[in-house]
Image 1 (cartoon, rainbow, N blue to C red):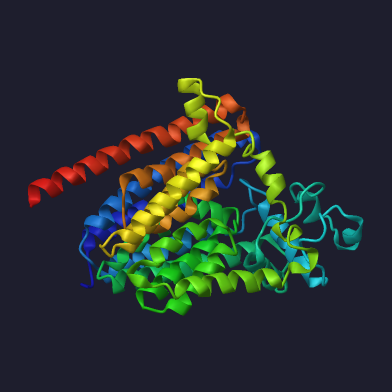
Image 2: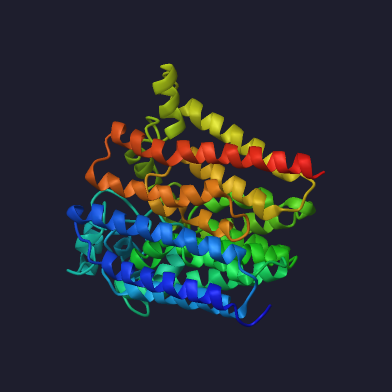
Length: 434
């Protein structure tokens, strides 16, 4: 790795300074009336990010480029860290769950509005908890442990966001280490560290997905170092923060690494046993409430199902779609296990992307974990997905079924077209390079 790349450095400094100004401008948005302004800022930032990504992927490996990527990544996060959350109020539930545990109460036992928790209410956190009168917590055990430990330092929004940024820094370190082990330039970590989506969602909103991504990055680093115990344990920890990392398991079982499976399963079981005093059903928290609100049972959650219904007039029940989705994911998992090549990160990206597209998240932060894979497999279709999902903030202005269908069409149909073009081009290049 050479020490200085002046042209790349100057370009990144200029782009980074503009991004800092835009982050400071973005925190001025407030309320529903400010969402259009915020989206404008975020899309301009995304365009600048794409320029920076293009530069860094073509620049020669350089210590100065790496340091600039890390330095500005920290600066971006600090520039919005102390601003109140604007895009989501989930962070108040995190603080509440930590407070409840500190009182010696299982966080899955009561809804926040329960009279048994009246003594824990205050004017700063409790009034801002969403669904406090109807929903138990939805967050799995490892997330609960992090909430508890964080709130023992400070029951504040800023400190909870600091925790999420710390996990992001762990992820960035793991990305750099993994890139080095794979023989790739460490400066490619910019593809994650500068992405506006993860910066707004973690330093801005403090979403718990940052913890999951930190554990995912550490799990793949452990896998690369041939630590089956570490990989299984860390992937289980990621799954115990948000359930979606479960789909990455087949990519980790390649090369006959079957020892990961019992470690993964044992970690999941032990973690849930710690909270099982409320019973096996209650420990799932508000998952049933969430699936009902998001339209999982009616099928409105799923864009592919809505598209089929509109195009062909099929009145397919949502259960049929979920069965088909399970079949598709199992087929991809089997294909991953049977493939002889060792590009496990590419296969993991495929699994993660397929799961995200088939589930069709209603919120932008569910796309954040895809950004991690861009550092290793920079696919244009995934770049598009991780930026186009910003249109989901448009739901602040209306999220009727027709509006959601239009928004999802803008997100997923171009992504599919780009993916097909990419695949065809790679096949063409491969055929004529033999």
